[in-house]
Length: 102
Image (cartoon, rainbow, N blue to C red):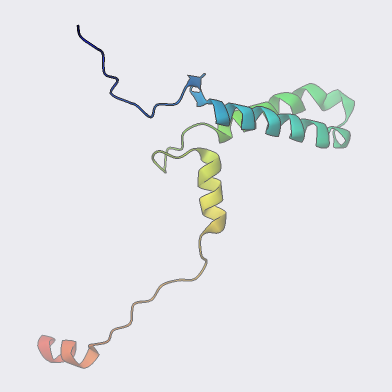
């Protein structure tokens, strides 16, 4: 008897390329944004508003081109959480380096 051994044991089920957790977050967040901001949109622009919000939510959950293995919403979180300070290396051996060069 032979048994098939799956190569990816930790693979998560996906629908439309999204994991189940991401799909639920996408649906809840888009419905939340649509209902909260609906009063701010004129009735003439309601359909373009729905299309734009749903398109933006789908864009957020697509894979990021600049950060491998991350989604766009994760890239935004990383962007807003990064430290604003600049790192400057201290030259501890300044005199020794001058002697070596000169």
